[in-house]
Amino acid sequence: MEHSHVIKIFSCRGSRYLAEKIAKELKLDLGQAIVNVFSDGEFQPAFDESVRGATVFIVQSTFPPVENLFELLLMIDAAKRASAYKVIAVMPYFGWARQDRKDRPRVSIGAKLVANLLGAAGCDRVMTADLHADQIQGFFDFPVDHVYASSLFLEYLRAQKIENLSIAAPDMGGAKRANAYSRHLACPLIVCHKSRERANVVGSMTAIGDVEGRNVVIVDDMVDTAGTLCKAANMLKEKGALSVRAVATHAVLSGAAYENIANSQLDELVVTDTIPLRAKEGQDTSKIKVISIAELFADIIDKVYNYQSISPTFKF
Image (tube, rainbow, N blue to C red; front, side, top):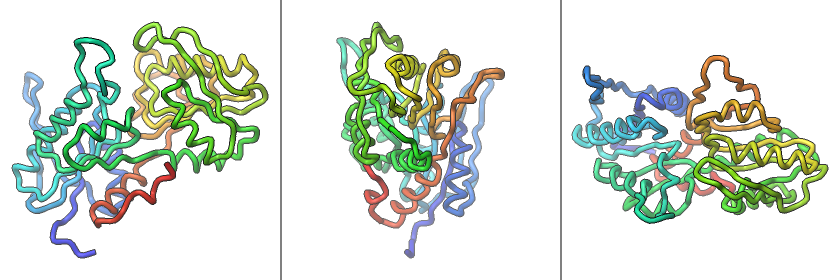
């Protein structure tokens, strides 16, 4: 398709590894940008090439620290001030998505605030993967392309040819996602029920569904401290599961996550590269397998740029 607006792919510092893969899939060179850092820690991104009249895609996952989000906002602002035609934020991992509602008095709705900040910076469109809550799309006053990693995980699981397969949801909130997997793989569904003592701390847990003699795959959108995941894996093994794997789009893996996974009954954890693995030297990552989401995002970027539908790309 002929375009009067050239496509350009740029990256912030936190997601350069992924942006390079996406650009390679699109057979494009990654755009040149620099970040000037002042002695007090203040920083100022700048484009090192013209973006005038271009459709600009800026790749950055907004995992902590908060500088990742603010660098993206500054890059969007710089692109707009440099007369870019459209500025599209490619946010494989949308940080602050767990703050999608007031679940108790006197708290912020962080996801809505991030949406407002992106709009104020001059963003024209957002692309993101597996939002923690689908309704976050409604926080934006411009288009959101919600990418699902399910097509990657379904392909991986089918290739494993797992017998006596069951899909499990780690909690009641994940039942809808797990049910979609179980329908596509034509296998039974298990739902784990948990009670939280406080944030990131799981109390008791039990399973609803037949577990004994099954090879179980737990599906979730993210893994943070891995407390829920590991407790679910241990509980499922105690109830007679032959094996327990897990698939999750976003490998947040904070706190004691690596130790929790290594010491758990979990046989394998499959994640995407929306967030880089940040294991310290000596930490065991042998159970963690990473599948790249770059090809999926490259396909969506190409379709959006060429005004094509993206919905046929996803199973659910």
